[in-house]
Length: 175
Image 1 (cartoon, one colour):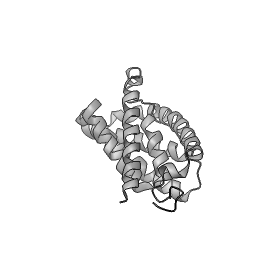
Image 2 (cartoon, helix red, strand yellow):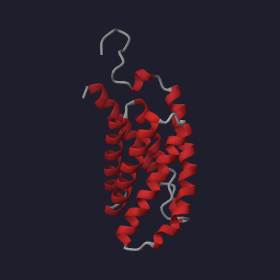
Image 3 (cartoon, rainbow, N blue to C red):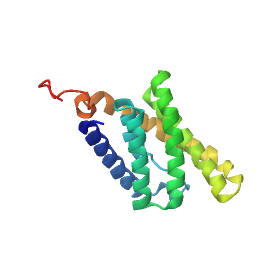
Image 4 (cartoon, one colour):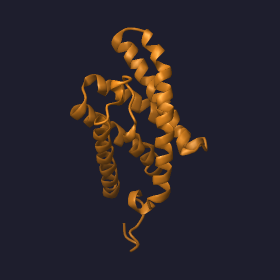
């Protein structure tokens, strides 16, 4: 991996971690447990389109691990890691092959994230009744997925490739 790519991934990981912290300051889950704005996903969707699936996966997993250490616990790590892996897997496939708008890819990721979280919750809690909570999560995930997807599309269109693409030159012909 080139140093520029390491730096780009590290900066995006830091941004995702800061957005995780900002998100923790707005406890939407007090009204409805498990609901979040999904702010760190803005960075993940951006990274997926600009740096590729491998970089997005590394950024996502490092962010999930650090967020659990700093702001969460073992259970938040389980829920977030399962959601991150499943959602990013589908988003990577759709971003590459479907022609969906970024918002559609983001919504599919949010829905997969919710499905994974419900699956983990069913295993951890040992009950299937938690499945009745899925419609609430799917509605909130769809709304946040659209917002995050639209914002990511704006970022992708407005931030120059030279800022995030380690393969681009600085104009001097050197990397």
